[in-house]
Length: 214
Ligand code: AP5
Ligand code: MG
Ligand code: ZN
Image 1 (spheres, rainbow, N blue to C red):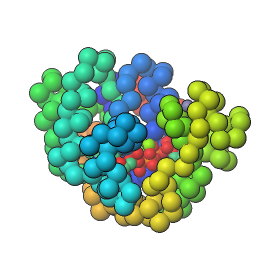
Image 2: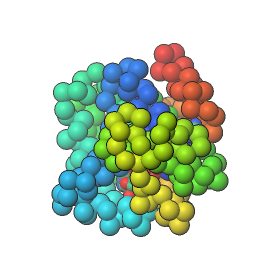
Image 3: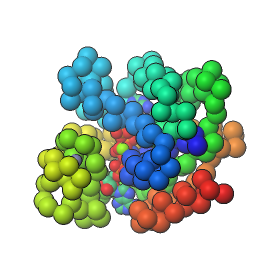
Image 4: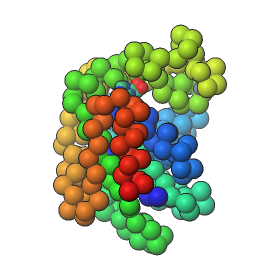
């Protein structure tokens, strides 16, 4: 099961990827999570990525592509993978196709999770993320049992630096300019599946499962 989750910031890519990963036992690969993990560990990569992330801009292709190539070659990807937030440019999509061909693999579905812009802003400004395990919450739609505390690990919840409204708007512009052309790209490849991401989380998951199990 080789999946790509495509969609604007806040579409629910990470939320759904976590659930699909738990259901089918395939790894969830989020390039944004890899950068945040590097930042937490104080690596050069983390510091370099942060400069772009804080402005709501994409990290350069050559940086991202190498990371994904290494990750997809790991043994836990034998059964499949869920790519969340990669590819985001035409160059990344071309690179992905080539690296999968080298590994004797191909994408099964590109799930295009669609949500209106205003819903995105509402979702991201009230999102909270666990500092320890990365689990994602929403103050209204998916609140933790205890305020500011992760249900899964007891870690502290924080608001991502790039979830300020102004940065969210910049990320949306970047998505429109550089990532949204991939919708036509994957439509041309016959891989695109549209998902209504504005529905409730369980309903979105059901729609995704229907596609996977069809
Ligand atoms: P990344 O971390 O990937 O951010 P993003 O794509 O902007 O997406 P988000 O993580 O913000 O949203 P999501 O779709 O995962 O939504 P979530 O499930 O959390 O990337 C960050 C940065 O890293 C980029 O800006 C860039 O700088 C860099 N980067 C990463 N990959 C790159 C690449 N390939 N190339 C270059 N640069 C790259 O949900 C959002 C909120 O909504 C949560 O609070 C959740 O609880 C809630 N929610 C989810 N689903 C629903 C629902 N159905 N109903 C109501 N609420 C919901
Ligand atoms: Mg995410
Ligand atoms: Zn946690």
